[in-house]
Image (tube, rainbow, N blue to C red; front, side, top):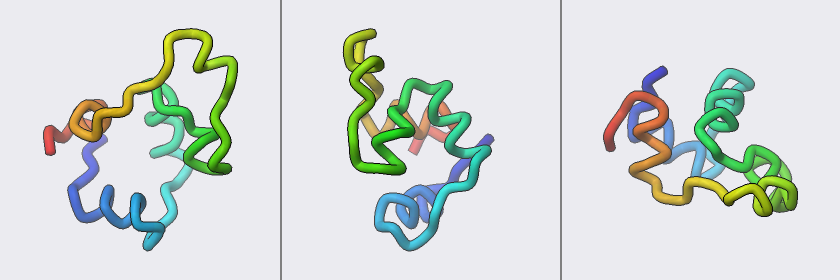
Amino acid sequence: MEINDVTQSNYEKSKRTPDATYLNKAAKAGIDVNYVITGEKCISQEKNGGFKRNRKEIAGSFGTDR
């Protein structure tokens, strides 16, 4: 699944809302989807090694290197 920079930016600026497919892939990439949706960190994930925080790492998980 590829996400272009504009789409990702729109998600980050709350101009668009990611769909379930995006969120599912994000969770598999190690992103705290609970935090994305609610703003509250998932404590169990924090105890298990944390999350990817680097935007380039995250984008790479979706098939783009930007």
